[in-house]
Image (cartoon, rainbow, N blue to C red; front, side, top):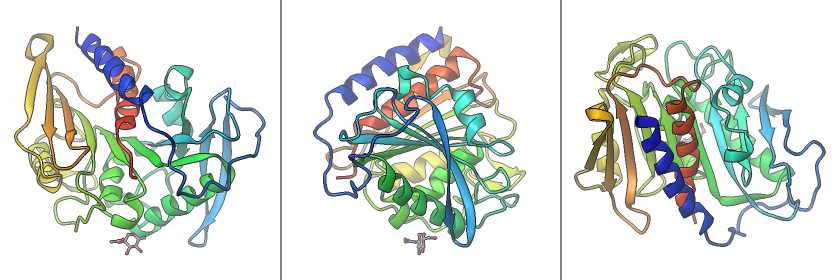
Length: 303
Ligand SMILES: *[C@@H]1O[C@H](CO)[C@@H](O)[C@H](O)[C@H]1NC(C)=O
């Protein structure tokens, strides 16, 4: 069964996190040393950014130590939902996934993220929001700034690509794990990642009717073909040809690329499930997939 493959992957990828090196001390650690109430439960925070008030949910480990620096995982929701829906739907705040991390689930403006035509915020506004949110989180909580990651679904996954293509804001992230992404800013957007490689793990259903694998016209503009999207990141990351593993009777395909640099092994990874539409986390398959995405990210750092 294919979800078993994912579970195995999860174990292997988690192992690489357990052996991670010491926290990076060069970032803003002013949020360290302060204890918080209700650790282990989600809290809702707001901040002013670019003249508007924006909000996000934050979830600390239930045994949060004010002096321990934690990795941070941002989860960007899909169109028409919000940060609360994303954490409920993905289960990413369950101790199994969030025990040693700070989870952050931001709300998009008008329940969407910048890039597609239907977005309410401009790319500039949403990048500024992420930038200001990073400062806000670091000022209140104890963050390992070399281990900041992002995952997302659909419109939120597409925004990860936009983020990664901006050297200033995207450069703060060590890796990205989008699922069922709509990469509207890719076909003609300028992409200048901060580093080579910029690790990506992408998961996509071949039967997805909205985030279509074959690309073309979507509800928010023009989508790239997924094969082209992969080729773009393989090129930017300096990768060779992928190794492919097929499972579930040829229904599930895993592509892993070895790319440039110290963190180049597997710096681009792609799961394609032939008979699956959008990733829905109520299936074991997707539940494990999100778990993998948050764990897989843990392998790399920005410093
Ligand atoms: C990245 O985004 C910020 C905020 O929108 C913008 O000011 C900057 O010019 C962008 N580009 C680069 C290369 O940093």
